[in-house]
Length: 171
Image (cartoon, rainbow, N blue to C red):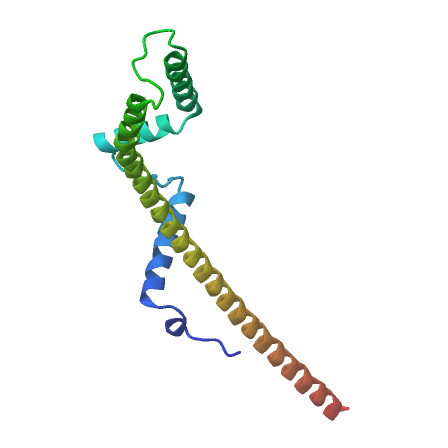
């Protein structure tokens, strides 16, 4: 396969990605570690993350299950006055309120995490493209070196053949 010239192989976007990779690589070689981008969280995002992490924990599930069992047990046995008789309408109202109130917080946290995951996937994709382009360039350089080596070998063989013919002609 004949080697392609660089403009045929690399488009403008690919060149930009390669330049970014080279700058990053030079910075790492120079002892500079690239800073991780950590966006500043708003107060609402912090609250949403706190609510989602709290409500998604075993501690919350165990505490809530204990409260529910106590609520039901106290109302069924009538140990204390029946403040919420059997269909447990007040308990259903409290749980519905909790679910309706917590759902938007959890969704906000999930949406933010989804955006973070999307950005990381995009970054991984760019890194993979950069690596692929670098490997392609290395292959191109190796092919060029191999061609030079083959040309040098062919020239050496030509010279040796000429020398051999000259030697036969002398004898």
